[in-house]
Image (cartoon, rainbow, N blue to C red; front, side):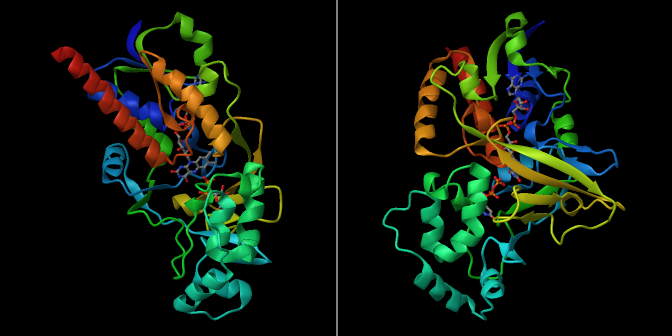
Length: 371
Ligand code: FAD
Ligand code: UDP
């Protein structure tokens, strides 16, 4: 069969584009994924005990974009959820992002917000130009808090020192002088009521969308017939690594179920300094599910394995630019998503990027028709 579009990858990027192209533009779409399921890294499923878990680590939806939120709301109801994380430091479980309570409980101080702001000024280091992930943190909260909360975690997570990573990595985590202990402050913070996979199923349930799962595009591309290709896999792999490999950081997920209803006080506890894992997630606290047992995931960062995180460093950005130039020269091939554009994007940013590409694709077509 001939398709208007072949889409490689059924994560957020691929599924949003499949949905838009099929339901809004009347296109026929072949949606291909090498995994046995849709949803990409946001895939969730009930485990053998019937507890909903995220196979690729905890995914919490948050956005400031009303457009992204209302777009996704067509495919799911939501459960209000504000994410709170504790970090295990010096034998205590303390709020992260660092806030007033973090500092007071860690050091036994009794600062007010104003006093904490003054304290940060005295301990914060003078950095002329903030370039790295170390600069961001030491300039705001000083070396001791940096060492306790950021240095070890970042070295584990990325396999390099924060001083070798772009500032955007630790800039994701704010510093607060008030008692706000939410991980995110976005306007929309929810979990899909019945899970991500159910949302994806509804998104791609259209007669014009054919799914081809458990299939690597490389293996079948010569047998497919399509006009345009949308590629959401790793951009360097598409071009057979012609400029060299783009570095990605991977994770090993250790999923466990315990015969106890409750394990930790919040859904995610970070371990910046102890253990080989970075964090433990307890899913029932994300999803609100009630169950006599509880399921956890321990995340062990590693170099090898599925590509989960583009690594933001100047040399990697330069290498990506070479691939981007090549990508821009292709006709009828569009790269999108976290791997397709080598960007450390959250889910909502990927949805926004896919919606933008959709507009470009239909815009280009209507221009063509006018001409
Ligand atoms: P993906 O979901 O990676 O989808 C790409 C798909 O392409 C994959 O399914 C892959 O199998 C397929 N593919 C690749 N190559 C081929 C090929 N050759 N042939 C066939 N198929 C192929 N974001 C948030 O907003 N909040 C969070 O809390 C959050 N937590 C995260 C936690 C972890 C551990 C990770 C790794 C990411 C997290 N993210 C989070 C980011 C989020 O996962 C991504 O932004 C989003 O899933 C990216 O969607 P995508 O479609 O670009 O890529
Ligand atoms: N980070 C840290 N300590 C923490 C939490 C985060 O050092 O307790 C740093 C670390 O480098 C991490 C980055 O901040 O990779 C971004 O954290 P985030 O929770 O956004 O990571 P993600 O959920 O994308 O893995």
